[in-house]
Length: 108
Image (cartoon, rainbow, N blue to C red; front, side):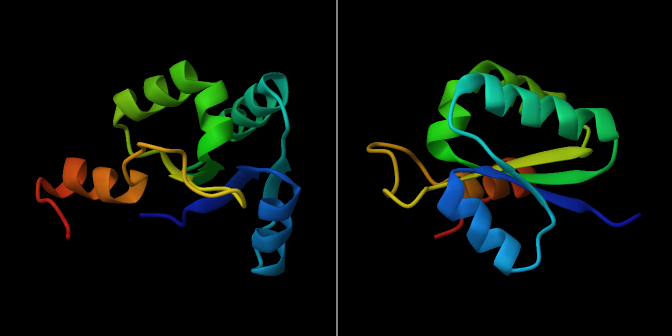
């Protein structure tokens, strides 16, 4: 199994934080078209990728995110994180849900 590339799609503060942490593949986005452009750019690379995206931006392209997650190829894994304003009210933890889908066990 080869290495997995990490990409981040987020607001200004989120992308700066990840760049400071050493992630080179960051996409700063503020609206739906910028998020779609970033997702398409990542998909075109055709590499195994972990895409970290803020919840609010993921909501803008929910259909695209759901389609990628349904493919279950393991080529692209999407993880949604809160942005600087915090978690969206009523949202479940994306990482916890992903682990439950992959392993079949709820993590407390």
